[in-house]
Length: 90
Image 1 (spheres, rainbow, N blue to C red):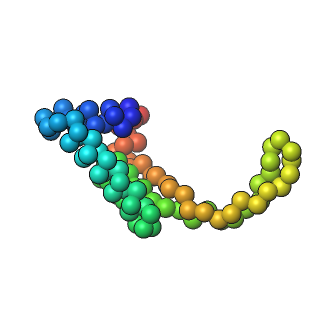
Image 2 (cartoon, rainbow, N blue to C red):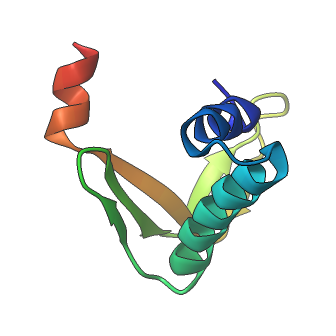
């Protein structure tokens, strides 16, 4: 399923227009992204927790040339699945 499929499911529940359903889905995703940009956690009951993790600077190796390269420190998104989600997938 992709973003369009989620919008279609929302459209079927809300009985509104497809444009309204797409706006709802976009708003949810934009809210999650904006919260992560601020460094906040986003917790959705029964689904999981989205958070931001600080990854330390490190040395990596170019597999083609074998040359060592420096990878800078960066923030990366992280997702921890809730127990309910894990159990429903089993």
